[in-house]
Image (cartoon, rainbow, N blue to C red; front, top):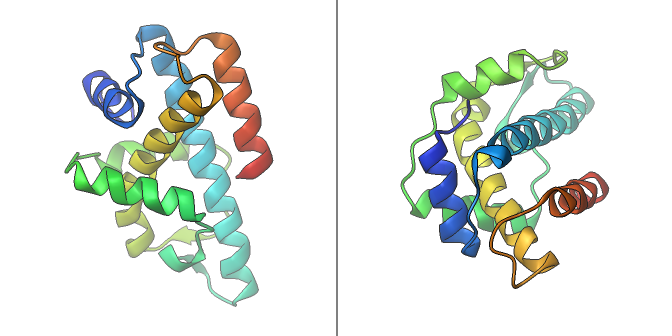
Amino acid sequence: MVMGVAQFERLFRHAAGLDIDKSDLKRLEDFINNELHGLLLMAQRLAKMNGRDVITEADVPLTRGLQESIRQFRELNEEVPVKDILERLAKLPPLDLAIGKDMEEMLPDLAGGMVISLAKVFKVIDPAMKNPQTEHWERVEHIYELLV
């Protein structure tokens, strides 16, 4: 697991006043893993275009909103073990390039920023939402597929 249950709950509550339950955790974990992998695939493309054999932090296509969410996550001083993220990514289709040390160090902040941004998108979809339901998850996943 990328983050512990209590950590996910804290982040969702802090970012958007949302409560998540155990049924949300697997979905959240899968979402974070898939989005991280997708960003790394895009970063890999840029690294290759620039003739590098290692993915660096500069290769990751960060939107302004995701950068802001990463900043907010960093302010919370939450710890996310890089080892756990790398283990989860290893279960996904492999990348052609290695992940550089700076990128590896950025992974926890990137994962945390994604959690923050995800919680905020839920609130945009339904400002009165207290606990995301399956239909909300499906909408948010579709939005991220279109934009990230």
